[in-house]
Image (cartoon, one colour):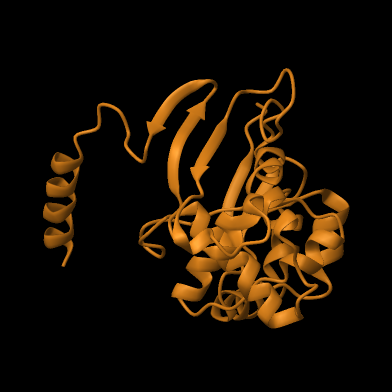
Length: 224
């Protein structure tokens, strides 16, 4: 039917251990046996991946949604994303969900991805350009959306214009990399989706923020 397949996979060491004990194979091997690998498949997390699984992902073009803040928040580990990206495995950037990433902030996600892989693999492990690619064109490719992810004629006018006049960015040598390297919540001047302004000066036009805050408080209280 042309519908892409998605699930969360190999997020924790316990997940992998269970799969080995019950199915006598790794999670990626299990998915391969059931036709769940391919260019139309993408998995979230993939933190605990064996050396033997990487060629399977590479050969089939299976994509990955990298969720570094969620993995840090839950203490799951750090995915081998730079290594997998070098092998040509499609990589995108994601926040997972509110259950394991309260902020769900893509700028912070990009900053975290840039920081943790450099801390683990050295200053050359990942570049700002790598992270920006994962969060834009990489995401579009993993989702099979050919009209997105690049700024060029014929693509959807999906753009974010950030306010980089804040003091936190004054010392950044290249303003273009500031949101990724400096972190924080960059103020949005304009966010356009297919040319339509959806956020202006950090505000969503027409959104009842006070009402949303009240409903959120009620929901959190009910779950507590």
